Image (cartoon, rainbow, N blue to C red; front, top):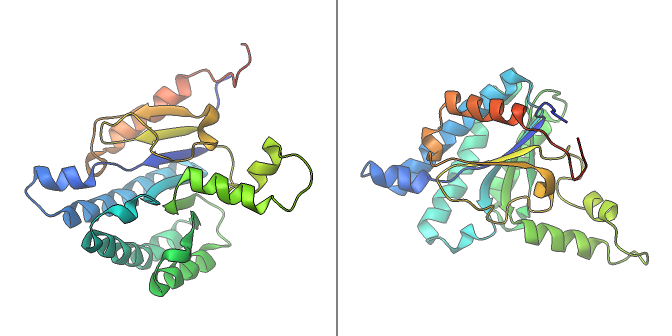
Length: 227
């Protein structure tokens, strides 16, 4: 059956290559990527999308050079401070998935402030995947269930995933040209529609984003059943 899109996941790839093409530092690419997050978030809010989950920092990203990781931590803190007025003005709720325990006190504090300030909002929910990896998420969910003596079920595992309070992911978009999920929402992607574009994340236009949404609307989703 054809359904409206309620929950979009995006793998925001290509910031570094975008900067390299322009002879700039990778940090400039990440700043351009943050600006694109604002644009896409505003668009999704205006279009009535319910959930937007963005792959912002993976469990594997700690392997990057220490200076780049440090910059990303500061950028995320700055982003949350700067975007709070946008969230408030547009009734956007902010949430996260992933293990936040390894982040700096300053970043964790800003995350908590932003969540608290937007907790009563009823419009779009923007979800940042921070220190997130799907395999890590599933392991954490299973460890949380070890106290149960009953056999594991799909329903029990889903209740303990980071996304347990969110609706199913309808579609996942990856920018930057690679055709893989890179440990993003693996469980949740079971019946998600997948879209891959060579466009680097900072270059993703609203027109292309709208085109992807239109293609999604034309797809028939059977979830393993028949027409």
